[in-house]
Length: 114
Image 1 (cartoon, one colour):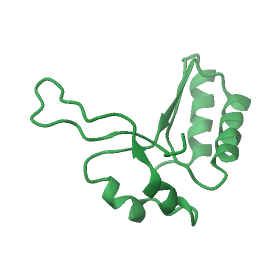
Image 2 (cartoon, rainbow, N blue to C red):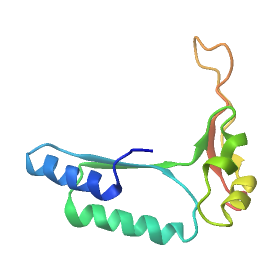
Image 3 (cartoon, rainbow, N blue to C red):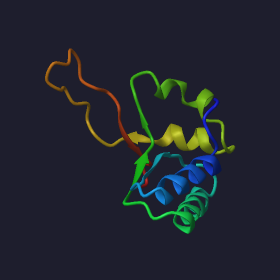
Image 4 (cartoon, rainbow, N blue to C red):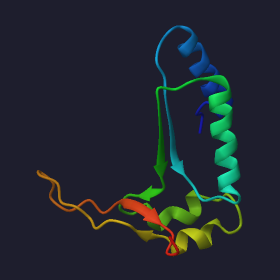
C-alpha cells in the first residue's frame, strides 16, 4: 500500500537516466496471474521503450516460513491463482547458513509441470 505505480517508477527511471546515471530494473516477484506472459512482456516492452537499463533482474515467486500458508489471502489476482499456488513446489532444499540456528525454509517455487 502506498507504493508508487509502475508508470511513476518508470518516469523516475527516465529522469535518472537523463541525468546521466546508470539504471537497473528489478521485476520481483513474477507472479503467475492470468495471461502473465503477455502482462510481463508488455511491462518489459514499456521499460525498454523508455529507458536502457544496464541490468535487468527478474525474480521468481518464493515463500518464507509461514508466508506460504498466507498465500490465498495475500494474492487475490485471478480466479485460478489459488489453484496454481497450491500446486507449486519448492525447488531447493532448505539450507543452513553459518550462524543460523535453523535452516532457511524459503525457496524458489515452481509448478509441478515445469
